[in-house]
Image (cartoon, rainbow, N blue to C red; front, top):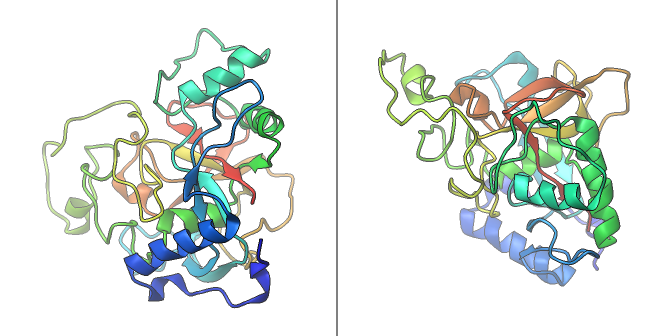
Length: 292
């Protein structure tokens, strides 16, 4: 494998969609891996499907000109991802987690709501996610972990600098958010009385909404996704290589992506929300990274 860290990373917002996709193909070729792949597991079957994410330079966060901007998304700053990595095309599903549950002594609490099939797994704590990641790493012989906040936003943007990976606005056709709190109507300060899409008070199966240029689905909406980054109230003094900026004693972590329960403004690429490490919710899940 080539060492990418010694050469200058491309500035992704300067590239066309076709060039962004070509970067992914090039990285896949250099790594001798398909663009999308799944590792084999010792117990049989395949690990979650991953997408290759090439190295590159992007601007993280948002400024006051973006509708929905909040002060904790400031200041915008450049992040240089020097090494490619792989990230799940989808959030971890109930089906994915069921394989882990059947192979271990992890017990489902019967009083909690539980996802089914291809719905994002929910009502699990950060500690349970870490148990799953440890098990998945042992099953595949590869290193699986949670993404950092910077890695998550870089992968979700897929070379874009707009509020969403598909542009500056959204509707329920592209994103599963709280249908009573749309984006464009709020942006234009229009009054609305009825949702323009059918209310769905739960997460939908993964892969239901359009993917970004790197093949990732539901990076906007559906469920909030845990990252490994501990919460800070701004982007001041963050590491510029996409890594986490040290460990603190805070129990709060950054989640990204918004959810079915939240307004569309919170599904923007730059949006972030703090959640407790032992928090469980029906709108909170996770996506995995596999180191390359």
